[in-house]
Image 1 (spheres, one colour):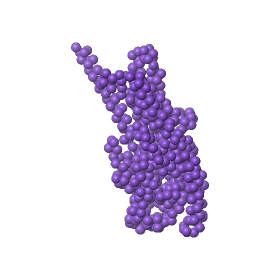
Image 2: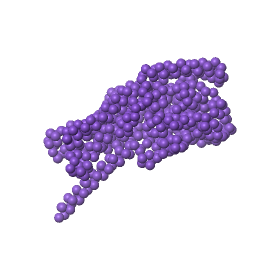
Image 3: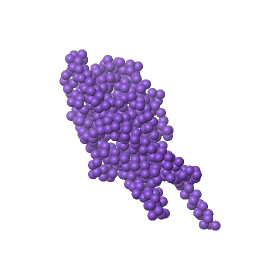
Image 4: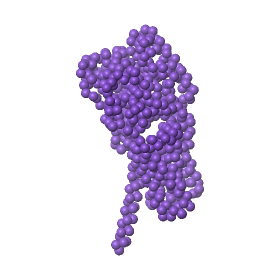
Length: 200
Length: 321
């Protein structure tokens, strides 16, 4: 049963890519397919990142469902789509001109923050294996808090390049804020329990 | 998610590069014919000489496909998404019922039907480059009349230093003028734009009523829009209901929204970057295929410098961007 769900999850996770590829080669992406592809890949990276961060609160509220088993997969798909987003940018916008990439990273704050977010995903990808998790022990958890930084960077990158309509990026920002609020709530609750037990 | 929803609907319009090519041929043939007809005497205003100067026939081999011209539109009155206006504008087919308020510092003020405006002026076709402030561009075959010919007819007074334009404000027609999910307007409505009188009377400044040999579709700013080819696209205001001659500099909606990013002049200038992106190059959209976009250098005044640079003599274009 678990295996079937896992297979279905993988199929669902690559569906956006399959669709985008099909649509891109069949002129179904509107007047500027390159831009559409770039934006959609970036958005799916952000969606998967926010989904992976939604796992912990879901696990806390529904303890019987093995939500945790999907966290790594969602995180890796986030990195996968973010990488494709970056490749699309390099290919369609910079024609793989890396000196121009460096130029853009320095000059354009929204590119800078997007790039930082992408780079912060890389150590998470490389330490996503069970072996790495075991070896890193307690610091693994600390390191993987970078996912919050990556999500925040992605959201800022998204809203910063918006021209005027903030309604769309605000949907994802609200999602991020809710996740952060849940985390802060549990952190404060945890701290309070600790201080109470210390006083006793 | 929005994306999947959009794709599940089968697009009725799928143009192959080949048919784009043939469509383009067809247009050029019609264009050439109509130019000949006009030049041969049906309209005295449209002489052979003006054809060669402003018609832009030298751009005829660079035309963007009809599909991208009519399906990649920044028309926030419908949607901030560029594909949505084509879909949302299906029931917006204004025509002879449209009227335009002409007022302010002008002798012939009043509310005029589109028909009147067309009677006063002569229709011609022009191929212009269109450069969006977002750094993409197209080459578009318009039909319409020069704004100067309208201005000459209504006779502005000596006090008229600027021309102010307004788009129709009606959320029942334009869903994008309603508030969004978070209660925000995408732009302050109605959309307003303005030109100096020198810019407005420049022979390049055009009032379009058609594109690709047909009446303007809703998403392109039916039934009457401005086309100022040496300025960023947002200056070329769509679905115009008001033309006012003023002494003071009028409001430009994007300038009002973010004055550090969008100037009143908004002349295409590769040397003055947008604060968030470069304006040195542009992505020229030729057709809707994946590789139908190519990156090219942006020209000063979008390549129309010989005709418009004198307007800005002595003006610091970095400060007045």
